[in-house]
Image 1: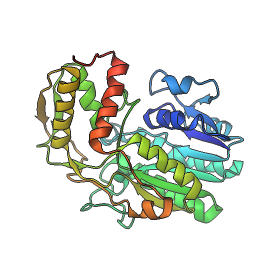
Image 2: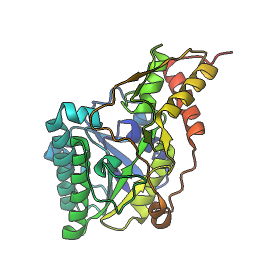
Image 3: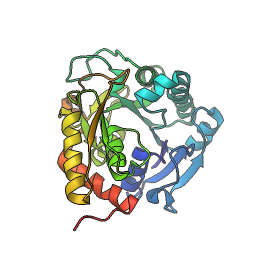
Image 4: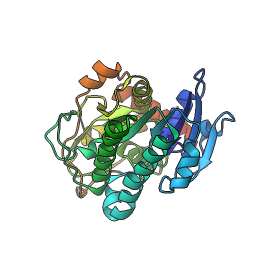
Length: 315
């Protein structure tokens, strides 16, 4: 089976490639526009097929998908704050890019298409979030992901395409150097000798899922998801951002010998106060079972950051 991973040189894509490149009978092709920075080690494997281009270019997408049996659609303009600064670009990438992919998949006879959605599509609801909540995005990024989910469902019903949408919670782990997400931002600041910045008083919550668990969920969805289905992919655990900051601070100080300060800044527009997910449907239908808890996942992520930045563990 040949699988195309759009946005495959990014954080999640790099982890997918690392997890899948040695799977027997599986060939991986990556479509990426190069905005994620230099290719990291898994992307340099000679067995990997790479296509350079942007999902907003329909011809490029059609060329990349030719001969593929399945697609994992990760390419996106990510982030709530970025979408508020530049909503047009966010919608063009996340909606027009997804439409280009679905049209190319339909024309090429692709059997399966897994879409990386987000809890931002669900937006402002009292958590825990599940698949029954109506979509209520509060940012252009969330609106784009909601539109992507709708397109996936429509193409399953109208054209019989085997689509599935996975609503990722806050993903963290190795190969996240260029990510703007909170865990990556905390480690990046600590390594630069800068304070960790918590927006708000730290009581706001998120659901942190380790990227290894998420990659397994994507694989399960490729094998088992029913056409047009939607799943929450998360840890199912609600964690206050202030608690996360304290865990990162203690870890960096004890394992890296680096003093870390924590400062507070104003709440950002478009951020929700609480966010975590129920994952019972993914457990029942996909067999999804996250295995890496936050403490272990942060330690593994920190080990990668140290290696990537050449920071030695304190004696």
